[in-house]
Image (cartoon, rainbow, N blue to C red; front, side):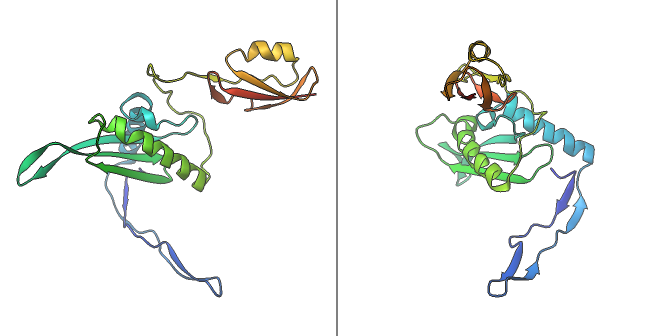
Length: 211
C-alpha cells in the first residue's frame, strides 16, 4: 500500500515522561525490503478501491473518501475436517486508497442469523469504524474516487447546486431532489448547507439562510 515497501512492524510509537512532558523514546520506521514494484502497488490499490465501489465491499463505501478493501470468507477446520456452517467473515480496508494513512482489519468468528457472505456481515460494521478513523485522523475529502455502482436498496445521490444569490423560488426549482429548511424570511439566499457541489442523498435536507 506504500509503494511496495515492507516495514518492520511495531506496537509502541513513542514513550513520554508525563511529569516533564518530554519524549523519552520514539520508534523510527525501518524498511526491511521492497517486496513489489511501485507500479504493482498502485494497481493493487486501484483494484481494492474497485471492490468497495463496484464489488462485494459496497456497504463500506463512503462518499468523498477513497476506500479500498477486500472481503474474506473462510470455512473453519477441526480435526482435519471442515465444519458445517462455521465460518470466519473478514474485511480488510485501507483509507485513503491512493495515499494510505490507516489499515483496518475486521473479523467476525462464526456470525449467527446472517447470510454467509462477508459482504453482508463485515462491511457495514467496517464502514462505521472507517468513519471514526477518518474523523480521528482528520482525513479530508478528495475528488477522483470511483463512483459506486448502486444496488436496488441504495438511495441515489445528487450534487447540490449553488443557489446562493438566487431567489427562493429559483432555489426551490434547482433543489427539487432535496428537502429544504429555511432560516430567515427574506427572498434571497445568502448561505446554504451543504455547500455547493457536495453530494447528498436524494431527499436529504438542504438548509438555506435567507437575506
